[in-house]
Amino acid sequence: MEKLKIGFIGAGFAARFHLRGLVGVRNADVVAVFSRTEKTAKEFTSLSEQLGFGRPKIYTSIDDFLADREINAVWIISPNDTHLSYAKRIAEEVRQSSKTNIIGVAIEKPLARNVKEAKEMINSIERAGLLHGYLENQVFMPSIQRAKEVIWNLAVKYSGRPYLARAAEEHGGPHNDWFWRPTISGGGALIDMSCHSLEASRHLLLDPSKNKNSLRPKYIISFISSLKWLKKEYAEQLKQKYNVNFSKEPAEDYALTLVQYEDEDGNIVLSEARTSWSFIGAGLRLSMEVLGPEYSVFVNSQNQELSAFISRNVKVPPSEAFLEKQNADQGLMPVIPDEAVSYGYQAEDRHMVESFLNKRLPYENWYDGLLVVQLMMHAYKSAEEGKRLEFNESEVENYIPKVSQGLWRPLS
Image (cartoon, rainbow, N blue to C red; front, side, top):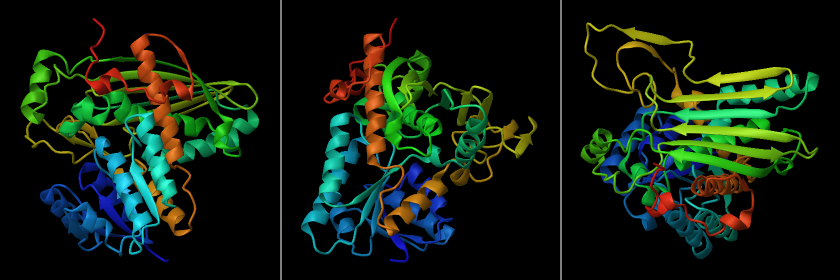
């Protein structure tokens, strides 16, 4: 197989980022898209044509989509509550049909809403003999990849292993209504974005010459709150824009999680993940830093080589022309030249494509997604109980956060 032919499940915001990322992957093509909304699928295919992929076939039936023999791999880019059902349906098709040519499945973060779902997904996909990739774009950001090279090829050699990584993702809130409904999404800012920060931090702290199991989680402590969106005027905004009753079914718009790891030599290694839907600035801000004995490394997505200034004398209509989740259209704005590249979508998609074509499991796979879910469930449990927890897989095996059940209320 010289070229991987990809079918998308989902055609929304994140799917379009992947479509732009795949432009730079020469041994892949996008041949089909399934969406429950035909209008969204048509917008996806129009963008695909503009980007040079041609027009993928549109399916509004998942059965017809999976029966398309041209599809070699599936990218699941759909709401969190659909991940389990789509994974099981793909696995069922592969096991029962002699017509399918699907060899691998890649899925957008988070892998699942809880540990039980995540393990069921892995079991289904592996029983079908399929390869699986976890689409964690921040691990593949060029700045993160280069930072890891600097740390482990230079700084560690002359000083020692890093002992602290901090990662933060902050913006003013998600684009789609389902994110704001925790009984569908599984939670708020923690499950939406801490999955990024936790895995990016772990990646930077991992010794590239050793197995990933060389860094073992020991303790987790977390705090969550709703700082902005439960205020009356902002809850009303959500009701008007998304028809969401956030006051009745709230989720956290701020989360801080600390994970204590231990390496093979018994060293304590710390990871801090800070995420927020209550940040107002130019737009999405990703920041990471790593500290070691005699060095530090910093990444900030808004520290770009390009910026634009729009004076107050003109009125520019709201857009995201400069960067994702843009909050202003005037003044001095950072401009990201190619977000699909800067945020790691192109590199992660290239890695998934090359892994599937070479019949090997990607570096980021569903076992990494499972660990991230386990860490997040410990974080929710820690926040609920107000104490530090020892990492114990069995303790979160059947755990469902109160936020996900619609039962959470922020501390007064």
